[in-house]
Each structure stands twice: as structure tokens, then as C-alpha cells.
Image (cartoon, rainbow, N blue to C red):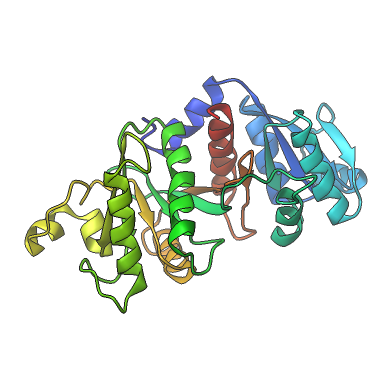
Length: 302
């Protein structure tokens, strides 16, 4: 089991080198992280985009990209389509967003005829290393689905299970968050959470997965809080995945972890045929490198 981001990087270095296809690679922050990952033996880059721009960015940052495969695509839509086509043809293992809008890249990814679409819902999975928590914790979905329904939440959980298993977690403990731990008919988050727990007990998510809900945030991450409230739980204080009912809750928890809890992180989009590394311009260099490592480990295990 990968317990922290340092171990994640170590695993990524030790496994088979994955081919990462970068869409619109003429982005300095992304290119720096990609080159570092390549130097560490984590990836073999394929740089798609404005080749003159890529070489200019590389020169400005003292990066040597001369040995990397490059594919010319000046227009952003073209870069997205070509990056997806490379993976679809089996010449790449996962994709990363460069200097391109998320919507443009994902449109190419989910294209029914030429993309990497599956029957699964696309969802965002973040992993956080929080100094005050004893292991890494995942958060989903704070970046893609606004108000997922019950079936959507089932897919979001399944996507997180793929990530958890790639990280070597034998028994994945998933908390379906809500404002309270009791089901209230006027609070859909609690109704859905209880149904997801029922599905889990009936085997819907397979072996080695425990889904509980509804759980308030404190119960999910604190065994003491659960004991104080007299709440019986198999996962309280040892949760691996926080599944949120809305994008607002996920976005708020994620940014709180980063800015208030000083957490380090990595993130990927799941649900397509390959992981999609989708980083924010505000993400640190370390977060970008961690995300590449995460994407490579998932790609190698699926």
C-alpha cells in the first residue's frame, strides 16, 4: 500500500516507464514537471502542440527536450484530437493537459467516435497527504460533476476504487459525506448515501470495499468523534475516500486541505480508457509531478 506521495513517486520510478501524451505542451509549468518526471524514469513524453512554442518554452527554462517525440498541432482543438488519437492507437498510456482549456481536451477525450469514452462517468479523483492524518486520503468528485444522482455516485465510487486498488489498498474504506449521519428525506445526500451503503453490503462494489453513509466529515476522519457520538462504524478515523454529494462540498474541502491544512496533493480524471492528468495553473510544481506519478501508476495497473 502506498502510504504517502514520496512512496508514490518511488513506485512510479520502479515500474515500467509509461508513455505520457501532453496536449498543448507549450506550457512552462507543465513542461518543467514533465521533464522532471522523464528524468526520473517515470514517463516517456510525447509532446503535442506548437513545436516552435514548445522549444521556446524549453529554452527559457533550460530544459532539454531534444530526445522527446513531438507532434505538430498549432490549434488547441487539433492538439487535443491528436493527443487522444495517439493514445487510442496504443502509442500512449495516459494524457496530460497542457496549455489548453479543460473543456477542449475533455471534448476530445469523450468523443464517441474518435475519443476514449467508456460507459463510465467521467469524474475527478484527488489524493491528499495531510500532515494531521495518518495516511493519504482521496476526495471525489470536487472537480467535474456538479450534483451527481445516485447512479452517478455509484460510478464515481467505482472510479475511486480503481485508483485505490492501483495504490495497493487492500480494503478501501469509502465515506459518503453529508451534513449529518442520519437519513433525512429532505436531504438527498443522506438518502443516496444510505442507498450506496446498502449497495456495498450487497456486493455492488466487489470485495475489499466498504462504503458507509451518510457520514458527517468529523465521523469519517475521527474515530474519537464517532465514539463521542456513539456512532458505530467500520471506517471512522480510517477512511480512504471522501465521496462528496456536490461539487461545492468537494471544492471547499479540497481547497481547505491545501490552504488551511498544508496538504500536498495529486489528481487525475477517471472514467475514460486511460487516466487524464488535469492540473490547475495554480497547482505547485510538486502537485503536477505527483499527478504525473499518480497517472502513471494507475495506467500501469489497468
